[in-house]
Amino acid sequence: MQQLNFSLINLWCTKNLVDSQYFLWRLFDISLKTPEYQLNYFTDPFDTQTNIVFLNTCGFISSGRDEADETVKKLLKAKKIVYLMGCAVQYYKRLVKEQWIKNVHYLSRGDLNTINLKNIVQWYDSTTYGDFEFAPWPRVYTNLEQKFEYLKIAEWCDNHCTFCIIPAIRWKQQSLTIEKNLAEAKNMIASWIKEIILIAQDTTRYGTDLYGEPRLLELLKKLDAIPWDFTYRLLYLYPDIVTLNQIKQLKKLKKFIPYFDIPLQHSSSPVLKRMGRFYDEGYIIKFLDQIKKSFPIRFIRTNLIIWFPGETDKDFEKLLKFVDETKFDNIALFEYHDEPMAASSKLQNKVDDHIIRTRFTKIRQLVNKQLLEHEQIRKWIQEMGYIMEIWKDGNVEKLTVRPWLHCPEIDEYDEISLEKVIGTYENKDELDVGDKILYTV
Image (cartoon, rainbow, N blue to C red; front, top):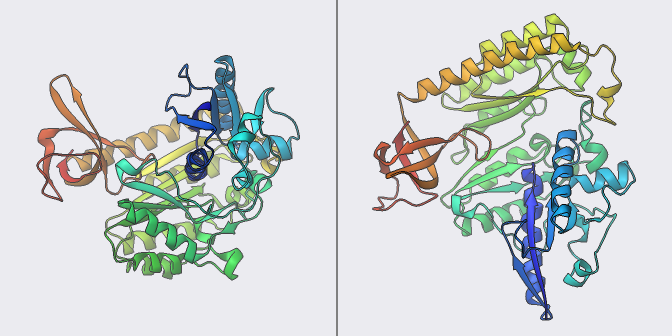
């Protein structure tokens, strides 16, 4: 019998994480059916007993590739056999057409139906990627203890934002049927997952490739009708597809968490046009106003790219005013950089370095001020949330709690002492990870 000790690292992306979860189950399943191999999973990839490490990582952002590069070098230095998975495979094998690092092996999603442990032992490589579909076996729900998990309803993207190379890496959008998504959701709920997080590159265009038009709202209505105790939220909404009337219809959904993750990237129409976005600043205002009218209680998050090529002082001042007046609950600021092979890298009128520093300081100070004010307001209310961790600070028992509106792994958590807990929703004597509680910040 040959013993294989392996670990898996998932960097950056929750969409890749779903693939990693399917892959883990696949490995465990074939190990049971291959008696000549004994498969052992190690949480620490640098454990002295670990000999194989699967690295599922981002390929479309240079900072993601840099992190993967450093991780691979550390693993190789530790004498691990490394298999690269995810977007990075496509970036290096199909776009750059070169071996990334010597002794790194490629493993793509399309291989999952044919891979076996003998392939791995023989240093299996692949150049294929395969169509996106749920694998014919279960997943390892790695977030099960904390009662949430991701449902990837579609993969890849039809948009051609000038700063992004995802379509070049991942082809056009491919959606799963409504029936397959509902089946996977039911699997999650049957496994006691309480919160389902719907993800895709662009959730608003879900179903366009299958049905000729977006079917997100239909999927949500059918998900909402499942008669079990759970909630769900959406990530990556784009305002050009979701109509103002559809925002009103979301209000009718009983299990929908009013969390709006909208990667606007900017607010100035000239900049949005150069980015390849399909909306302008006027529609953004109408879109956000409709959300606020429909959902008095909500959480709105956005991403913004600063100093995109051609961004003038007037564009930037518009952005500052927009952020100041909108008062988002969370904002991720991204500093523009030229991504190789992205159309924006060829645009003229790059912003000078000294202007970049001034602009980033200004908007960072404004965002920090707003987020601090947001947190101060929360200290005057009773909050509902989920226990993510129970730990001790000296002799004091403390809890890490995720407020119910905050998204796992994205938004801030609260750290509170046990005395801040007002009550539980299940009338339990002892608290556990995943419990829903009422507390004060």
